[in-house]
Length: 258
Image 1 (cartoon, rainbow, N blue to C red):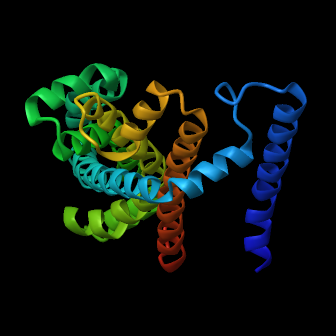
Image 2 (tube, rainbow, N blue to C red):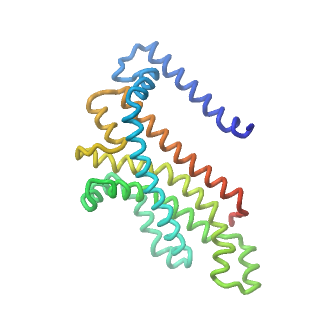
Image 3 (cartoon, rainbow, N blue to C red):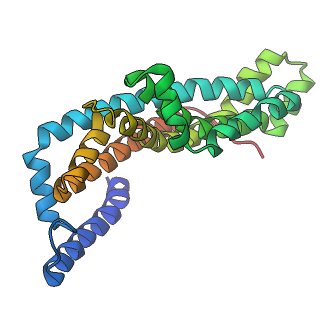
C-alpha cells in the first residue's frame, strides 16, 4: 500500500497543480476559448462526447496493441539472429537503424499505397515505429550475458542450446522488458500517425480522425479532450506492459550481463 501511494501520489499531485494553474491562467488572462479552453470545458467535452471518444480510443488501442505485439515478436526473433555472431549483427543491424532514422511520415503514405487505406496499413506503421527499441535491447541482452555463467557452462561443455536457454535468454529478459516499455508508447504514436493518413481519405477510424475533424472545425475544447484521451491510452498501455514486466522479473531470477 505504501509503495502504491509513493508511486501514485507525487504524479497525481503534479497533475492537480497543473490543472489548477491552467484554470487560473485561463481565468486571469481572459483568453479566447478557441485558443485555450479551460480544463472545465475540456472535461465537459469529454463527458459530452464520451461515446465517440471511447470508440476512437478503443479502435486506436487495438491497432496499437497489434503493432506492439508484432514488433515484440519480430524484434526478438531479429535480435536472436543478430546475436549469434558479430558478422550477422554487422549485416542486419544497419537495416534496423534505417527503420528508426527514416521519418515515418515519409514512409506511411507508401505503406498505405501498398496495403490500402485500412487497418493493416495502420498496424504496419505502428509496428515499424515501435520495432527498433525491441531489436536493440534484445540484441544487447542476448549478446552480453554474465561472463561467469558462460565460463561455467564452457567448463561443463554445455551445448549451444543449453547455453541459450540457461544463460542468454534469461540474461536478455530485463533488456527485452525495457525495450517493450519504450515500444509500448511508440506503438500508440505509430497507430495515430497511420490513422492520420487514412483519415485524410475520409475514413472514420480512431483518434486521428477526431483530431483532424476538431482541428478543421476549430473545436478546441473537443480537440484537447481527444488529445488527453490519446495520452491516457499511451499511459494505460505503458502501465500494462510495465506491470507485466515487473511480474516477470519478480517471478524469475534474471541477471543482466556486463
